[in-house]
Image 1: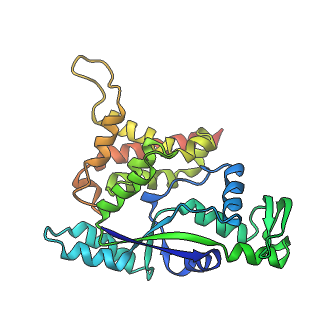
Image 2: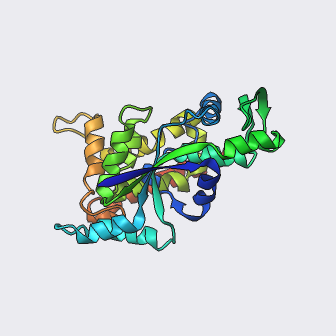
Length: 287
C-alpha cells in the first residue's frame, strides 16, 4: 500500500464529490454522529486554516490493477474494485465522509454557521446561524479557497482498506459496530440492507444517537447469533460477547463483500430475522 498527500481547495473538493468520489457503506458511519457544535467547529477550523487532518481516498483503478497482479490472486478484491470502476468514479472514500458532507451542506445552505467569518483580507466578523449565501462575497471566497488535505491510497486490496479504516478510527469516537461494519463481508452488507428496509421501524425503537452508533445493526447481529446457538451446553441462554460478534463478521472475509450470503452464513437465519422485522413493523404500524 502506498499513499500520496495533496492539498485541494474547498471549491475543488465540492466539485469532485459529484463526479469522481464514491462511497462505500462499509466505511461510513450513519449521519448523526456529529453534533451542531462539532459541525460549527469544523467549518471554523477550515476558515482558520487549521483543518489539517487528511481526508482519505483510495484510487479505484490502481487498487483494481494491484488486486489482479499480486502474487496471491485476490478475486474478491479485484471484483470489488471493478464494480466501483464501472460506476465511472475514480476514488472511493475511506475516511472523511462526514467532513465532506458538512462542506457540501454548508455550501448548499442546508445549515447556518455560528462562529467567526474571515475574509480573504483577514477581516473577521462574528455571525450566528448564517447561511453561506448570506455571507459577503469576500467571506465566501476565503472559505472556498481554503485548503483541505487529501491522502490518496494506491496499490491496496479491499481487506487492506478495511484495516486502514480501522487503524485510522481506532482512537476516535467510533463504536465497535462501526469497526465491524468496515469489514468486507456479506454479513455486514445484509445487516445494512435490513436496517435500510425497515428504517421506519428502526427509528421507532432507537433514538438518533443509537442509530448513529449503529446499535440496531449490533442488535440484529446478536439475534442472528441467538438463532444460531440459542443455548449453551448446560441449557442456559447464550450471552454473546463483543469477541463473538467480531468473529461473526470476520467469518466471511475470505469471500469478500459481494459474495452470496449462503457461502459463509445461514440464509435461513437471515430470513427469520427478516420475517421478525416484517411482523414487528406491521404491529407498529397498526398501533
